[in-house]
Structures are given as structure tokens and as C-alpha cells.
Length: 563
Image (spheres, rainbow, N blue to C red):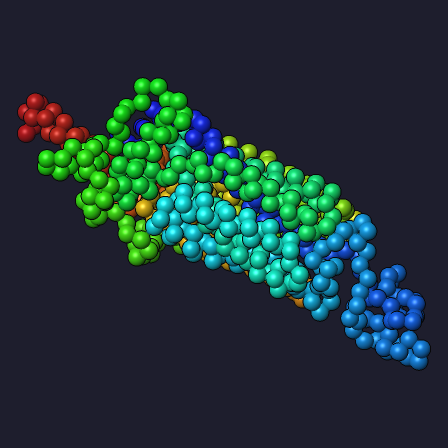
């Protein structure tokens, strides 16, 4: 029996799938908390230079354009108007609350450090993407997930104890690294336990929960204004996962690909029992078990089974090389660039929320709310036309909107009108790029064969993290080059949309088991292969018609006595 058939028989949307879905939803919520919490942990309260000892604020700090200077004080308040950089600041934390900026004076010459803090957790994501997938491929998804989850919670809580920016940055980096070792196997586990007809519908829910989590985070940040307590509260999703994560099953596909037939059988039976499936067969994978003379399938150990399946099983890290061989190489390169672009553009919009006119908490809430309808629209499109078209359409639409953001300041003089239009375009841009994220996760799961799915997903997310990693730095460069960030993102989006045309569509397809399955997909489901096949079919039909027509004419002429 095929695995998808077994999952159907064991209730395709039973308690096992719902438990994995709940874990994935909590993990996606924590994903948003971890990545974008820096908006609140490292927010900059109103501040100005502190006055000299023995002098008033008016005597010590220049008053320029209706406010006191933020980076300069008078060098000699009594005898000179010359200024010098200040080394002490006053932060108005009564309303804004405490942040790492106010605790460690990350302003003026050190104002780039909050962006570095954002980049460090994303750099951790990159390192985690290198390690998480191969470790899960070698040792299994469940043990990798459970051990990493415990470490992640310990490190995450330790962030609140940081006494300086260096410790804060190191711990955030470690959080990002370990986070990927939890999320990558968990996401793949969710898709592996879903049959094709539920994969896109259920698979979108964790992403929606991530967006809901961002909305919730804006409310939590509004209520909890001290960054240390805020960080602890934001660890709640993964802390709650500790309650039931040990009940999660191992990947059956992984067990089969490694030759652990007995283990796969046991896991499948436990899933069926947990789902309370009726009349489930006692043996599911007997026909996939290597037969040995004199031994029944029940008497063959997993070690012997693995030895017999060794030629078919992928052994550890050395098989990562398959990611760089055609046609997997095309999938690796195209999805990597697409994910790099999606993360760059998404974080580009998300991290500029604070620059929009109005209350920062409300702006963050509204921009996060945009993700929810975008995810629902993306789900509808995926169900109707597959994953590839929404990916390309979202990239192109985002590029067009960013071009408008670049050129509108040159066309509109009224600042109020311009501010409203730019805010609207920014929200529409985030909507557009959010359309691409669910299809990306589905394509990562659907286009990599089972034995290298974790490694392939890790590679894509590793390279994709370059986009999110560089987003804070690209945005910071806008201080020196106006709209450079949007210009870079436009070029990346258009290139990614063009390259995505090389990929096959995965609508109504089963998850791939081997590289040969991927070759078949490329031969039948890409835009170019379809056109080629249609042309060949047309030529074949034309040839058949001509031959049939000529034969009929010859027979007719013979009947009439002409030949």
C-alpha cells in the first residue's frame, strides 16, 4: 500500500494531523515573534542629550527646529557656542517604555546596532538552515525537533537576562540557529502527513497563524513596555509546545527512505490507532519490505532491512550533492533566488512600518492584518491554479507597486497626499509579497524528493535568509541613497518572477519520492514542456491525418479505376 493510501485509510485529517498542525501553527507564531519582535525590543524612545552637571538643559544642549539636539552638546556652556558629541542621553521611557536602545544608549554613532541585532537573528536562521535539514535527514525529524525545542526555549528566555548588547546579539543569533532546527523538520512533517487534497488547504493555516501572531504581538507590545518582560511573554508559543511535542510521530517517509520498514510500520499503526481509524490493515508496507528466503517480513529486523535497501537509501550528508545535479539543481537555484527575494521584500516592508505616519503600534497591527487576507487569497489561487502562478503574480505586482513608491515623490508635491498614498502603496506591497509566501513553502515541499527534502528546504532557506539578513542593512542605506532599498527589491523581484517560469507546476501532484519523479514532472508540467508536448501532439495528429487521408484517396481512386 502506498503511504498516501495508508494515510487516507487512517483518517487523512485525524488527531495526528491536527496535533502536528497545532505545533506548526504555534511555531509559525513564534517565528513572527522572534523575527519582528526587534521592532519593539529595539524601538527608539524620544531622546535628547543630557545636560552637563551643574548646568540646565537650556544651557547645555542646543535647541534646534523645536527640539533639543540628540547628538551634540555645547563644549563650554559659559564661554562658547561650539558643540561636541554627547556621551549621555535622556530617554523618555514613561510612555514608550524601556528598550535595548534606552538601556544601552544605542543612538547617534551607535544607531546602526539595532539593525545589527535584527540581522544577527536572521544570520542565525542562515546557519540553522545549513545544519537543521541535514541533521534531520540523518537522525530523523522527531529527535532533531524535540532536542532543538528544549534548547531554543532555554536560549530564548536567557535573552531577557542580557546585560549588554554583545550578550543580547549572541543569544539572538543562537535563537535563530536553533529555531531552524525546530521549524524545518516540523513544516516538512506536517506536509508529509497530509494527503494531496488537504495539503494546500491545511498547509496555509500555520502561515495565517503567523500573521495573527504579529497582530497579537502589537497588542502585547502596547501593554508590556519593558523589553525584558516582553521577550519572556513572546516565548509562550514554544513553551506551550513542550506540553505535547513528545507525542509527535516520526516521519514515515524518512523511515521508508532509510530502510526502517519495521519502524515505519509501527509508526503507521500508531497513527491509525491515535486517529481511531476503523478496519485499518494490520500490515501496510509488507510489499515494500525486502524479502529474504526462509524469513517472513515480520522476522526481518530493521538493521537487515536497511542493509538490503542500502542501494536505495540516501546515506547522510554526502548525498546533499544531489541538490546540485539536474534537474534538482534547477529547483535549488530558482527556489533559492525566489525565497531570497521574498524575504528581502517582505522584511523591507515590515521593518519600515515605523516610518509610516501615525501610531507605530497601530501601523504594525494594520500591516500585519494585511497578511491574513493575502494568505486567504493565496490559498484560493493555489487551489484553483496551483502554486506557481500566485508566486509569479505576487512578485510582479510587488515590483510594480515599489516602482510607484519610487516615482510618486517626484510627481506629487502635497506632503499629506503623498504620505497617504505611500502608506497605501506600502500596505498593498506587503499584501502582494505575502501572496508569494504560501506557494513558496508548498513548492519547497513538493519539488524536492523525500530523501533530500529536508536538505533541499534547508538550502533554499539558507540562501533565502541572505535576503532577510540584508534587509535591515539595505534599509539603513536609504539614509545615504534615497529609495535604494526599493530599487534593489524591484530588480530582485522581476528576476525571480522570470526564473520561476522554469519550474513545473505541482497542482494535484503527489509528493515526489525519487529524482526520477522530478524528471517526469519537468518533462510534463513546465510551461515550456507543455508547449513542446502540444506541438509534438499537433504534428503527430497532422501526420496521422495526412497518412489516413492519402490512403483513403488511393483506395477511392482504385475503386474508380484510376489506379
